[in-house]
Image (cartoon, rainbow, N blue to C red; front, top):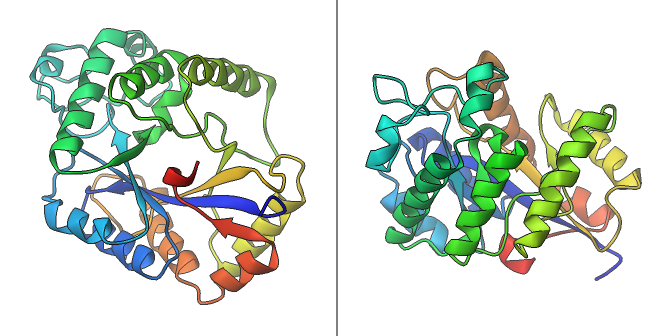
Length: 277
């Protein structure tokens, strides 16, 4: 199987809405989704939906969140990460306040630990950790996530690199290198890289992009990539960006295409879960 490229198809935001949950379950049941990331501080009761996932060949991670909704750890409410109304600030934005908050490693890790413990309490066998809005691209937050992974005996985290064929500048490369060092020192496993479905608005665009990825020197046969998606039947949740509202049903439509397995077979791509790393 070393001549095959391996691919984890992971859906973020499981638990955020019933619509998102239903889309993830439909894709997983069809065999077109191999992993989800559960948002522990979500606003829906996900016990029933999680039980459906446990009967499928799928890995379930925790989508650590410090940028949307309310915290789980009571002490986080009094931290600078949260507004006076008790909701997380937009700690994913490129603002001075968000960058300063990224230095609050103690507060961040306590909240991460609380979200992991909550997910474990629901009976989830946690396969991996990643972060909402990809805030772990910031090295101090990546360090907090790595620390939590080690503390809770979780061996996998999301790859520190998202791959863009057209833009991968020096600054991003430097940050990715730092995060790789952090994860390596904590003996954590990751896919080699992460792709997204951003702006893939049609099946034909997705096919062309997949062909580009397999022709690149980055994703070699034998290595593993993660395809990161955000499916939903409608628009997902209120309050999100217009781009994401459009993207969610588009992701579902692309991954529901009956030719998906045929495409992967023709390109020698084998689907795996985080448990297979």
